[in-house]
Length: 255
Image 1 (cartoon, rainbow, N blue to C red):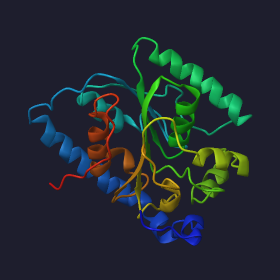
Image 2: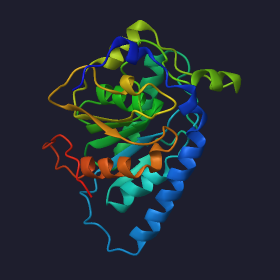
Image 3: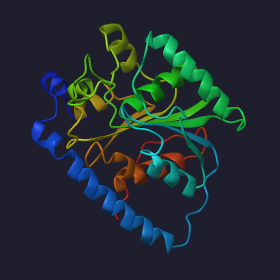
Image 4: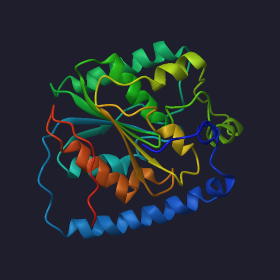
């Protein structure tokens, strides 16, 4: 893995990238919709093993926002659903207690399936997915994060000040929690990130050290468009298709 300097980890994305996030995401959505029309005319892919997939939206996003991710997983043959809490307005109250409450809700979602789930989290939702993997031993198969800055000592993003202006809360990140977020997970973990992310620091989306069950996969795209980014969907499909207990690193396929 290329060395990442401390300066890179601490740098917010340039405002030039942040300013065109919406436009880039709109073009990516248009591309996704065209691709969806093409796929609708093609034979469906071989069905997956049907294991449950729970998708956690980013800050300020909701179940509708991650709809393309959810429908993509369902088309591939998985029992996909979003977290069920509507708009993600951030952690409220004591973070540990808040996460425990979310863990109980996820357990209830998983109860009818009787098998471990893949947790997929976009941006802040990826923080939830990672921490739930620690709180639900034996119930999580793997974690896939998308544009999630879990390797940082503070909020190195361009999102916080905008959300504060709109009256939305954000996660309070102290040193203790920052250290916890960086700890390796007990299950396989894939972090998908983009160096052209205009919202969060791309370097903070990478694992602090290479591990047997951890990997970082780079894609090209905006932060706001990651839920329908074609490369993200390809990586997601590959990760979900792995047989249980046979995790391997992602190997990109040149098309």
